[in-house]
Image 1 (cartoon, rainbow, N blue to C red):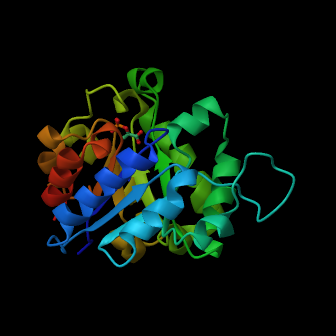
Image 2: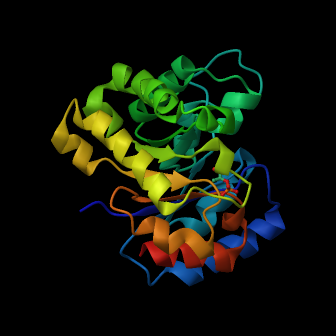
Length: 250
Ligand code: PEP
């Protein structure tokens, strides 16, 4: 039985004051709900704040990106061990906004996945097709390519040390997410591709879902057999909404 995981992706939102209120509400709202795992991925400057408020609670925290190298002349970058220094259990890798806006390639993303594992974190590896790819019937082809970049480097055993997040790009931030059936189809496709290498590992791999997950659709999405949790953007910034989604997972 795979334990569900709900992760909030705060993107570039927040302030010391608003974060404090949000994090404290999450701690209070979730402390009794022990049947699922929860995390928030915050902007890097707020990692110390997240650590000080969440340490010892049932909510983990993480980064939204990192460099694949441990040190070097990479102005503006953050190394894996720096996230570990602030107690990060998770790091989002290959989010579609970084693939698109920062031109991150499958190769770079697979290197980041490996680096996160090496430093003892759980990478949350995002994959998903754009609207154009979706409408032209290329979703499986694109997702297979993205998945294979990490599978080839890490093998089935390696990929299972992280978490996969299927996020159709056309569903992110639009308020019009994939239907539970559409999402389930792609999650099952991803799992079957890993199962081609190792059935046992595929059965325990967590594949969470992102793209306009809201209070209104969370329970239905989370009830699908291959959906093991949610990666939540905008709804993770509103405490009652994020708490309700987490409770649906619980
Ligand atoms: C995301 O950016 O990972 C995301 C899922 O955003 P939203 O929930 O706002 O669609």
